Image (cartoon, rainbow, N blue to C red; front, side, top):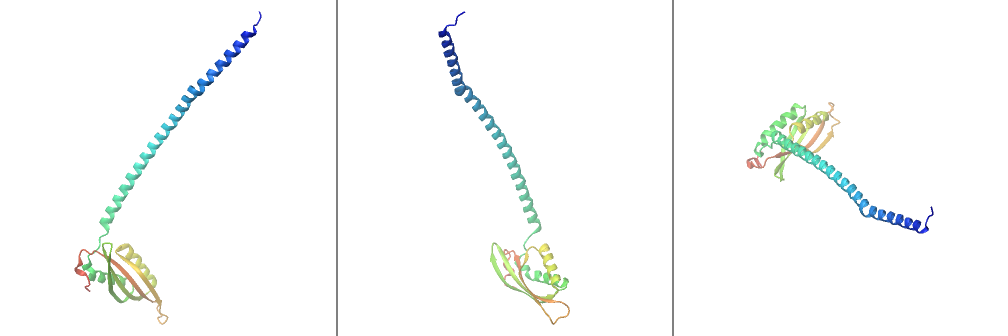
Amino acid sequence: MKHDSRMIVVHLTGVTGLVAVLLVAYFLGIRARLDAEAMTASIQQKIASGMTSADALRQDIAMLEEEVRTLRTRADQTFHLRPLSSRNTLLAELGERIRAAGITVDEMIPAGEEDGDGLVRVIIRLRAHGRLTDLLALMRTLRADRPDITVRTLEVRGDPLRGDGAQAFSVQLVWFADPADGAGRNSG
């Protein structure tokens, strides 16, 4: 059996042609399809992940909205501004609390009003003497019990002539009042 060299050339050319066709088919068809399938799977995974994230965000938003509703309800239930006309009653109650804390009141007077933000701020000037620890305890309980009263300034002076350790205080309080009832304006 003799091999014809033309047959080998034909066989090599046919094999080369077949390899070329397969490579072109792979890069144009099969490879593109495999890449498209991989990209589709990646996009589907991202979409699923995005849906999960969106669902989690919706749940977080719903939870936060519920917390805001709860806080608003608590604020409405626990904090109402007193009308401005109750200034004298407030001063009497405040004086009682100060005396009950062991502090001697030298002077407590309304020192002016400031309007703004839908509120009236009544400035209360207090001069007193006693122990600093008693005053600080009083300020803590006032902050907890009366969120409508805040300390604007506090000045403490020691009195070396006093043997009881008492100090003189000058405190400027601010009482936030409801301006809707203006009957108390500029009354004592």
